Image (cartoon, rainbow, N blue to C red; front, side, top):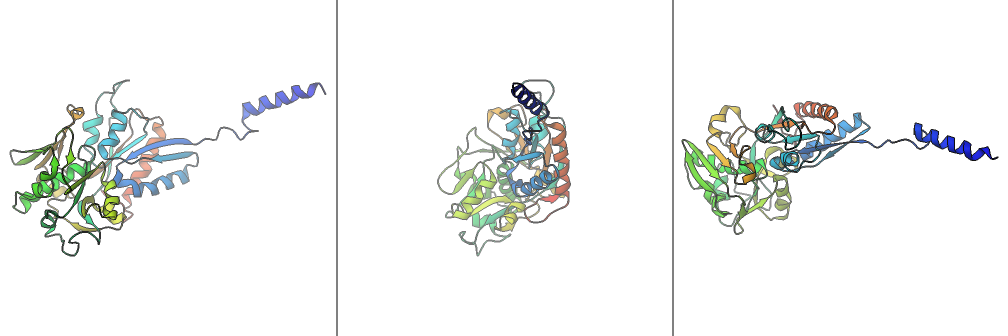
Length: 331
């Protein structure tokens, strides 16, 4: 009997070494992905599909405005495996630069995979919902009693694209009051508007806020959805996939101004937004109008680079299939 405790001790040691008696360390590998908020709906399906084929992986999705997605890595130094943005130019502009700690850049490559277009989203309860159309949208949004929602252009690609769309609309409709009547007159401090050749340049202040009740600003375009549902805004500049995915009414805009078509790339470049936040002074503060293209990258600081690349390849393949409503269009 005196040998029994020793035997139990040996058995316990064997269990620890083999992890067989306790079920082992079967905690899943956590893969952290930060996508643009406009991708949250389709990313739920991507997450579920990848996890189904990788039972030992827990994909954690955390949506932000596109600029904020990048800053999770470059400014906050979080352990992020995949960054997915709604403006491909943000990756080279903000991540092709040396890391503050370590060697090399934050990333050196990216993959493009989808496109989208800007629309004006609304609900049945929005003021003048029975009047608005693709022809008169700018007139309806300019009415003093109409409340318009945009995302913060300092944080989100949809935000600076809202400014670009209203600026491009001035040339398209030959009406130089559209930007001010819808947005510019209701931002404080008022962004500076200037001309650089044939381009209109909007220079944002370091801190941008809405003035009065005409315009509401939220950190990301996805956060405008609850305002629309609650009647806090009548109309919001959104991406087509977001409007369709959430069952919203929307009016499409002329292709010449909706940032959707490569054929109009030269026209889109006539709208430029300069971010006022000094943090961006040396890393691409100038956002130039371009066709909307989504892109993904695996940062060089990713904790699980091989798995992250596998996830990114899977994600790109899923988006290339064109799943329909709620998904941006494949390239």
